[in-house]
Length: 340
Ligand code: SF4
Ligand code: SF4
Image 1 (cartoon, rainbow, N blue to C red):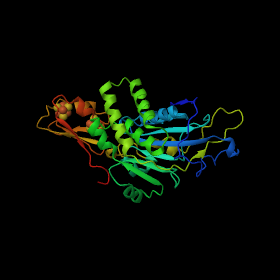
Image 2 (cartoon, helix red, strand yellow):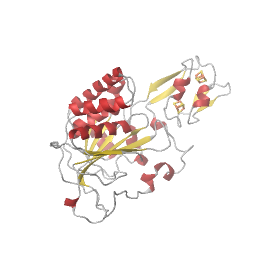
Image 3 (cartoon, rainbow, N blue to C red):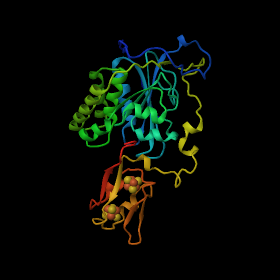
Image 4 (cartoon, rainbow, N blue to C red):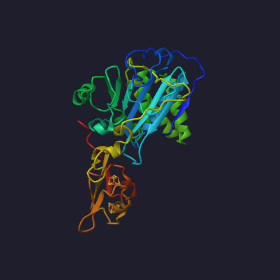
């Protein structure tokens, strides 16, 4: 699992929104006085490949670093590509961080794609308890999601997808979700998150106009997100003498979710992964077979006349077919939002 960590050198005032109370993230580990362990803020991001989960976590940790925190961020994803569930972790502390790996008991869960909530194997709500805060990108009110999924934790929702589509023209959520997260949790100021967005996007070679649009979307999210009190901060796991850091063993359901679920190919549908569905206009189709040949999921079949048919049970919405169809016979149609 790739990752990075920084140690902040400058002193900084800690945001008032953080309080040292609530869940102890370390009960399963060797005894060590809590006061000897650094308080670590644990943030866990859930989204889908292609939405910018990894980059959102990097921007948040960069902003927190600029604010003065010691930070660590790392993503976790499998071999599956666009549309597959992706998780990323951010740890923030005043002191060196000696733990690694999956965050099992998050203080903050950021849900970048609300369709994941309906899939228990995505483990979005695992380890969420009352002191946790759930930040969700959705057009639905928080109460509706809390009722449907039995969430007792405080939940804040913001429709970032619509804003991303309007301002960025694509379902790319990293910068506005980072703005939402930073404002809600209070881990950095507007100037720091704006600088973090600029640094991270510049590092990816993003053109100036695209950066400007991302900053606009980030600003919108920052201004519309309420600040919440995060009270579930927890001490880091105890580090045994001589150990550089701690990585606990995880149950297979979390460590390797796709192989612990039965029937991972034909019987495992991926229709819930889509933000957009490809819709073929057969009147424009030249039967070139490109979409049939290039669909990474084998989700396009041919009918008796050799016209392509999409298997929507196994189409994950990567839109490779749309970009490869020369006569533009395949339209991308936004799926009806979950629960709408
Ligand atoms: S790529 Fe386009 S034109 Fe070619 S078979 Fe598919 S839908 Fe038809
Ligand atoms: S049918 Fe198109 S959108 Fe669906 S998985 Fe195949 S290439 Fe991707």
